[in-house]
Length: 383
Ligand code: PMP
Ligand code: GLN
Image (tube, rainbow, N blue to C red; front, side, top):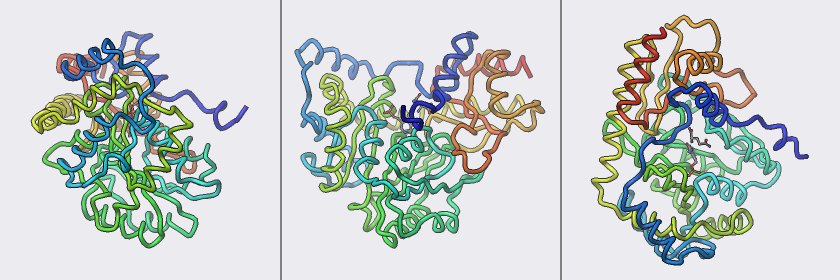
């Protein structure tokens, strides 16, 4: 057995969802909406299933979806993309990440990662023989520390993995920070794999700027999106990669040996979704912003200190003032079992190099208002 794989713990999302189910708890842990995405997109997939769209799709994706990804890049970010040579459709952003990292990393290459980080990044990098160089963001602002970031780059740096908007911190990196990152990539002749699955889920007038749009970055960035997040259909696992031709071709080579292709019926429906009017995407963000505020106000009323979140499905809350006797993991277990509300300990988003913070928990607010209200009521009764 490969101990990197076989000895890995089961993901915290699966553990907490199972615990939530066992205790009949409201699941504000794993990030998935509890309402379905747009009915016409779901219907388009159903129609495609019945329309004999059930054999292998082309390796890099249906032409209609690649064209829609290119149009979406132009419409929202002013990027001119060649759908035939610069887009690869994948089975979720997760496969897009695996394929992108596999396309770039050779054993011994250094990979700069930013903590707190999404849970699959470190295992993927390690499995490919990459050497992680971790840089920490500090709460509550979670701003990039320029010196720490610069110190993580060196002659062996192959790439930076950049997640913005960020899970779990809700950080949306600003133009200033991105400019600094771009300078480092140029200086060290490195790439960036940009996990932008929450690109449309942004709040308070924040603007999501893909690193790829900065001067000199067009050839250095692999940009990753997810239909699961943009259309509230997380079970579909349809992702898309945008990159310059040489990079996209390498990602396609990795993809051909990972999954080869992605279900054509779902691809057809996602193509329709990407062409939806701007009001849809703005409405999605506005709705989530309202839910963020609903949950945050409720948590603050109970004694949590809620950290700012400018994007994603998540808020991070500081539990210190509640006086709980135990760390974030014990706290999440405790509220799942005894208050009937599940959350995720933020320490799960750190590597094992240095001790993580133990006073922060992540709540998902992509739930119906009544569910968020009930969760707050349960926590209030408990504390
Ligand atoms: N990256 C981040 C930061 C995420 O939060 C998620 C969602 N779970 C993914 C990637 C994976 O996306 P997908 O479900 O499309 O594979
Ligand atoms: N991205 C989701 C989250 O952060 C989890 C997806 C998964 O369970 N792999 O909650």
